[in-house]
Image (cartoon, rainbow, N blue to C red; front, side, top):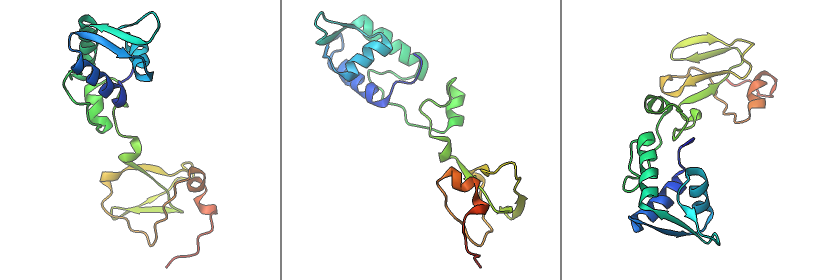
Amino acid sequence: MKTLMSKQLYNFTQDKLQKNRQGGQIKNSALATRLYEEYNFGQFDFNKKSLIFTLQDILVLSEEIQSRLSIDIRQDPYPSKEDRISSAKKFRNEKDNSYAVSKDFILVNSLSHLNVNHSSHKISPLTSLGSYIKAEDIKSIEHSAIVLVENLAVIANLSSINIEKIK
C-alpha cells in the first residue's frame, strides 16, 4: 500500500465488508474500481458489472491495513487526523492523515522588526516571504497593527504595498 486509504474509500469498503463478512460482490462503481486497482482486492466478473471478493481477499486487505495503521477495517472507524509530529512517531510518511503544516505554523513578515513574545527580531532581507513560526509558541504580539495577507506575492513585497502610517 503506497498511501493511506482515503476516508471515502475506507468507509465504502468497511460498509461492504460488514455486509459480506465471508465474501460477496459489489456493484461496479468508481470506488469499487479504486479498491480493485489500488489494493488488488477481488476480481471483476466477465462483464465488469460486479467486483467479486472472497474471505481470503478480505483477510489480505485487513492484514495490509492492520500492519500499516494498526486498525481493523472490518470494525474500527477511520483514524482521526493528527499533527505531523504524532504521525511521524507512528508512520514513515508523516503527511499521511495529518493536518496541513499551516495548521501548526504561521507565516509572518514585518517591515523591519518582528516584535513577538516581548522581544524584537530583525527581519533578514533574504527571507522576503517572512518566517514560519510555530503558532503555539506565540504568546504575545507587540505591533501597533496586524495585516492578514493570504497572497504570497503580497507578503513577499510587504514593503511595497500602500499602507498608511498607523498610530
